[in-house]
Image (cartoon, rainbow, N blue to C red; front, top):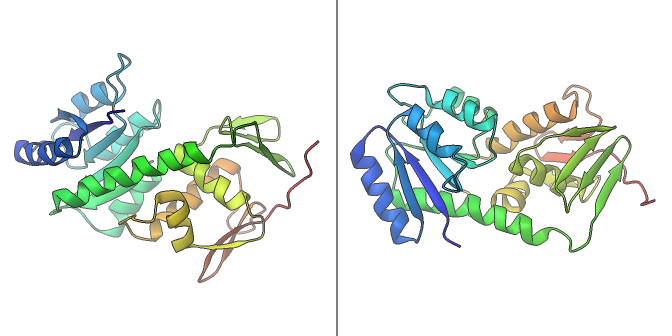
Length: 239
């Protein structure tokens, strides 16, 4: 199946170069030069919506992070931020807003293509790992339906992004096991992830917020200082 990539950048030369490299790797590429155009293409309902959005933060009409926030209100499409502002604040704000990865300018077009492939392979691995039959992980006040990719906290359904669900499933599959950040990057993001290990911390914070888990006194996801994270709830027997 041909995967679609939307390249969003106000510089025509960058769009042209990325299109050439992505098409060479077999992707179907569309372009957008403004935030408004990016939103129209990213959330299209005519079957042309992309699988991955390469989103430049510095757009002429709308801030790229605002474009990302708007996309996230209606879509779980993978988003890779492209930014010339490599400082920590911009990176972490972008990831908290729902980006799956980021790359900084100047970049190698081959690296960008590799990032696209990484997020898509993570999605493919998640689909392949889903059990053939319904399988629900049950804990005190929390259930994770691996087949339907649904989370319930008490009686309430909680929406998670694709990445957040995969991160939760990885942790919950082995309660009590300490996962290093590198192990989580390999399991959830993919072994060839190019980004900073802090991306794990950002998404754990986002996941805790969705779960209503207090980082200062966690009940679900614990921090093992200097190492990584572990799932704190013991598994319940299936009914």
